[in-house]
Length: 135
View (cartoon, rainbow, N blue to C red):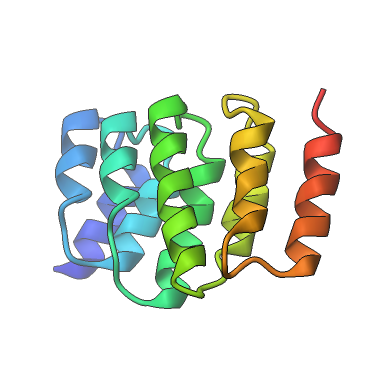
């Protein structure tokens, strides 16, 4: 049952179980996995390519970018997914700004997102501001 998957995604600590859950078809489970601090990087990276709807996809990418266990491979996968979304004309702006806060990524890598087709002047301004606050 979907509710059982959701409960597991929120509370589970076993990385093998969490990785298997990443393959289920429910976007609310993917999002729960993206906030579970025990979700392993391999599952997070897999989730970076999961697609459902514009709203769910953009939220998932933001949550993945904010995940404390997201390593540089995961963050680069999210960066690539966000870049593709921007090129498609979508607006995963919260994910862009979350990536700007991640010191595992070079500022120039993230700054390039502001030059993508779907980036607005406001996003470029906020992105520049976030990147300038890096220590």
